[in-house]
Length: 376
Image (cartoon, rainbow, N blue to C red; front, side):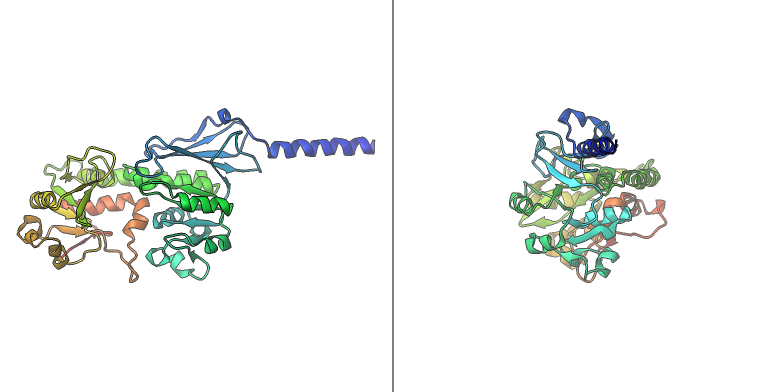
């Protein structure tokens, strides 16, 4: 009887171990665990009777077309579906490397910034926790320092692509057996879509419900602010950006900043770009647009009118310069050059929107500007 009992226990343990390490066919992951309301770049998929999920991402970088990348978030030692070729990331990630400061803001919003062990360019991050823990949180560099990465033993490295895959880096990470995930939040057209990526981050840390809860408050605040400018009669024309390498890059009409401008009761001036990517225009075209604009925003690191006129002294004769209607998103810049706009605004689109309404229709907002300041 004792031998029979031990045999039954042994078989039971084998069964449990087999279940814990079981794999599943790809068709099993068809349950939409989280379908974003605003973001187009990710979905969380699950399977019946399994704790593991798949984060399915689209458009991981500009020009990626219809590319889809899957990331298997493994829980309970479950294995990915048969034939799965994507990254396998252990659920409940506690050691995370962020290659963008906006990712830091998302983990901060989740109350999980202490899970970050590495960042890219620590001097260009404003988050107080990161800055106060420089002895523990390592700077892995803009071009990844693989010795540092290996020493950190991260559960996942969060990366981004600009115009293509970071193949050299991902090949090396694969060689080191370090999981990674491409994050395409910056390609979201909707300000709320960008913020919604914090739910994908919450999936990595096994805190999905918290992520959903934190995000759910953002659209409420955004819509409340948006309502302030819903009935404005006059919508000022708004110019964006400054030249780089003799070309002036302007976003599509249905993208992040133009949407914010529209929601703030303004009108984006460059309507010709109806594509899904930013385009370069000549300086003559840019001068023509500046001459027609009522406001001019987002001028890189510029803080003085003297810097603006160095672009083209002819701007001195434009109405937007004469009337001082130029505002830059660099009010919150640290002594080391870290600009909080490119960090925390991803989870505070309502604050950006309030700033823009304050600029375009100052009578509607009593609060002071938060991210923006007027160029004198």
